[in-house]
Image (tube, rainbow, N blue to C red; front, top):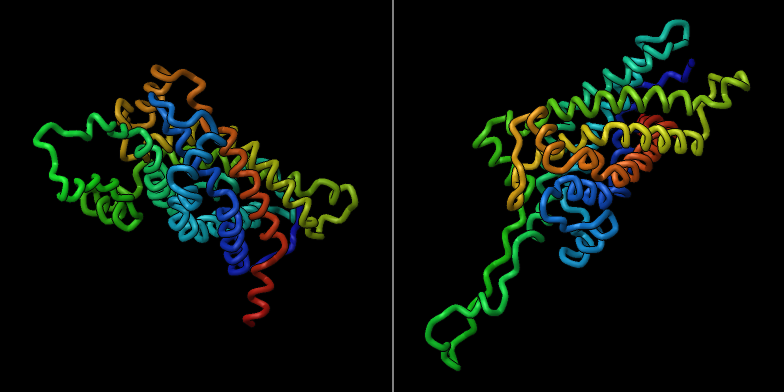
Length: 324
C-alpha cells in the first residue's frame, strides 16, 4: 500500500500533538484501570463507574487526573517514537510500494520495542500517583471511640487536639529522586521486561490491523495514493486499538502489579513476571488477568482514534509549513 511520504519532523509533531489530545480526553478512565487492576484482597471499587464516582467524592474532580502531568510530559516523545518508528520501519520494509503482512507485523514489533525506553519510566511514575488514592481509601478511619484517648479530661479552655495530618501525596519528582537514590536508574525501569512483553504484541496487532482497516475502500477504488478521510482513520484507530488492548490486557495486569511499589495490607509483592503470574493465578484465578479490560479498551480506542485522526490530518506538516 503506497502512501504519501511524510518527513520525520512532521511525524514527530503529529504523534506528540495526538498523544497530548488523546491522553487529556481519556486519563480518568486510565486511572480507574490502574486502581481496578491493583485490587487484590479489599475490593474498594466495584467497577469503573464506582471507581470514578468514589474518586471524585473523596479526592475531587482533579483527583481523576492524578499522574496526568507525568503522562502529558512524556506522552509526546512516547507517541512520537511509536508512530514515527512504525512509519520508518514500514518504509524500509516496503518493496515497490507494497508491504506484505509479515512486514507490517515486523514494523509494529519494531515500533513497540523502540517506545519502551520512554514508556517504562512514564508508566512507573504514573502508576504510583494513580494508585495512591486507592491505598488511602484502604486505610481505616479512626472512630470516635478510638480517637478518645484515655487520660484526664481536657480543660474547657484548652484548644481541641489537632487532627492527624493526612498522608502526604506523592509527587513524580519525589518518587523519581527516591528511586534514583535507592535503586539507581534501574529503579525507573522496573518492569521493563513486562512493558516490552505488553507493548510489542500490542503494536504487532494494532499497526497491521489499523493499516488494513484504514485502506478499506481505497484499494477497491484504485485510489491507494490518497490519504484516508478523517472519519475512516478515527474509526480504524478506535477499532484496532480496542482489539489490541483487550488482547494484551493480561500482560498489562502483570506489568501494573510489578510496577506498583506501595502495596495495601495483605497484598502480594512479586519477584518477577513468572512469580507474578503464578501468584495471581493461585490467589485470584484466571479472571484476574482481565481486570480493567473494559477500561483499557475505552482508553485505547479513543486514544488511538484521536492519534491516527490527528496524524493523518497532517498537523505536523501544517506547523512546519507555518514555521518555514
